[in-house]
Every structure is written in structure tokens, then in C-alpha cells.
Length: 314
Ligand SMILES: NC(=O)c1ccc[n+]([C@@H]2O[C@H](COP(=O)([O-])OP(=O)(O)OC[C@H]3O[C@@H](n4cnc5c(N)ncnc54)[C@H](OP(=O)(O)O)[C@@H]3O)[C@@H](O)[C@H]2O)c1
Image (cartoon, rainbow, N blue to C red):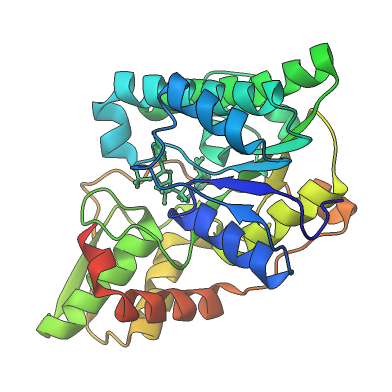
């Protein structure tokens, strides 16, 4: 259990996940949270990371920094995604261990499970068959981070854990027109369509794929919960266990944003995987479930989008 005054380093605190973890820690009364911006500390630079850990010696680390991107960015820059993520993870995890960090939590991602994983996907399906080609580099780097934690536990008796979130959304999301994930992309598109009075919005595919979404503040709550209540080499899935079609999602986003035009489907565009759902029974057994229903979460995200217009320019 983390003491309320324990020294906690949140890596990636300006990102969507890292900022949510800092909010959650503050909400729970943790008083000694340390952070560094990317500019102050480049986690891909081993010398900088070693110096930082030797000086600060954090007792707990949440590793939420990563080079992330959508399908296009991932598949166009395979080498960069592999190098940056691999080196960042190895630097942080290794320096944390060398400097006596009591517990570290590593952020994985459900996109690193095999392409043809059983649905819903249990934690045990990791590395059981081939990866999705479009994000193979990212997945290999993430799997290495996860495995490095496991190997440190086995070889040196550390207590380093990982969490595997489904699609996330919420404050500080990325609304870039080409590089964002489906939910923030829809928020932006429907908002712009409403503003410009567009009669229709065209979405890719036929809207049939099933997806799951978790509000990032719920994930942050789970991350702190696991830091305090879980030890083990196997990761823990973070999701709602609920799914909806992309068509249903578009209707929900249009409703929240207040867009009343038509939604059209360009079926010449790919649908993507038909179904992606996490098996969340492990987190449930540990005593955790999500709180924020999708419509409420989209409302909170849209509010944040409107209040921070600069975010749309990322
Ligand atoms: N978003 C999702 O739907 C989702 C789903 C599942 C899992 N996850 C996982 O959650 C983690 C965080 O994702 P996120 O969505 O919060 O991403 P994000 O918003 O892009 O945040 C990542 C943060 O890491 C920082 N960073 C990247 N490279 C760095 C470096 N070399 N040195 C220092 N800081 C660096 C970034 O800073 P700069 O922006 O300044 O570079 C940014 O603040 C990732 O591991 C991701 O795989 C996310």
C-alpha cells in the first residue's frame, strides 16, 4: 500500500493517461507526486533517465509515457515506434529497479494481443498467436516492456506489474484529424459538422464492428487500485466488458454533440476487426469495476474538448 506521502513518479503526466493518474492520486490525497515534461527529461535518453532516478529515487512509478499513434502513424513509422518505445521502457524500468523503486506499473494496451485472439480476450491470450501487422512494432515494444517487468520479478524479486487497457477516451485526448482514435475523431467530426451546418457526415465502413471504450478516469482509478492491491506477473485487463457497434457509437456521439444531420457509410472503406472486447473478469475478481457509462463519459469529453480548443490542434 502506498503511503500518502510516498514519492510517486508519473511518467507521461501531460498525456491522457498520465494526467488522469495524477488527478486520481491527488483526489485520493497523495501529496508527493513528481513529474517531468518531455522537454525537461527525454525518457529515450539513457543518461538523462539514469541521472533523474539516481537523484530522485521515486518509491513508486506509473509508466504512462509512450510514443503512441493511430493505425496510419504506426504503420508508416514502424522503426520509430519500435525504437522509441523499446528504449523508453527499458530506460525507465531498468533505472527504477537499480534505484530501489518498490513498485512500478507499466501501461500496456489491448492492441498488443494477437490478431485472432478469442473474444472476449483474456489476459492469458498474450503471445499465443500472430500479432496485428499494422502495429507490430508498437506491440513488440510493449510486450518487451511487460516481459521485462516479469523477468525482473523472477530474477530479482521485484513487484512490478502491468495493466492492459481497452480503447480509452476522456480529458486530454488527441483530436488530431488524421492521428486520433475513433471516439475523439467522431467528437471532432460531429462538432465541426454542427458548426458548419453540414447536411451529412460520412463514416468509414458499414458501422458493424463492435468496440469497447473505457473512460480514462476509471482507468486511472484502476491503476492506483492495482498499485495498492495487486502483485503478479500476468497483466490485468482494464475495460468495461461492454461493447457497442460503431454505428451505435456514432449515434451516441451525434446526440451528445447535438448534430442532427444524416450519418452516411462509405462501405468501400475497411471495417477493421469485427470485434474487440476484453475479458474483465480478473479485475472484477480483484474487486474493481468501471463507473462511468459511455454517454456520461462522452459528455465529459465533449465538455473538455470545448473548454480546451487548443487540444483540437494537436
Ligand atoms: N489512448 C488509448 O486509447 C490507450 C489505450 C490503451 C493503452 N494506452 C496506453 O497508455 C499509455 C499512455 O497513452 P496516452 O493515450 O496517454 O498517450 P499520450 O496522450 O500521447 O501521452 C503520452 C505521453 O508520453 C510522453 N512521452 C512520449 N515520449 C516521451 C519521451 N521520449 N520522453 C518523455 N516523455 C515522453 C508524451 O509527451 P509529448 O507529447 O511531449 O511527446 C505524452 O505526454 C501508452 O502506453 C498507451 O499504450 C492508451
